[in-house]
Length: 126
Image: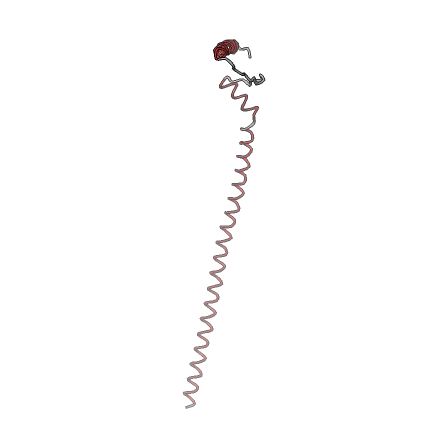
């Protein structure tokens, strides 16, 4: 009976030893897995931070280009050079028409004025 108790005790010790070793191996494996995942996440984080810096830089460049391109002086210069447009400094005129005949007269006067301005523009006079 003593041998049977001794045998049972030895089996229990072996079982507890096996459970302890298995638990230790499992915990070490989990720790290694967590460290591996943390390393991957840190690598991704670094890449994302670099991408963020790049996008911020691109955004600043694009904003400066937009500010430069929307400058009214630049637009006026291009309109004059490429499209032969000029900035009209004349005051606005309100015309009140009481008679339909006046409309025809105004059309003729306006057409004559335009023709004169076009001739000046062709001659290089603004």
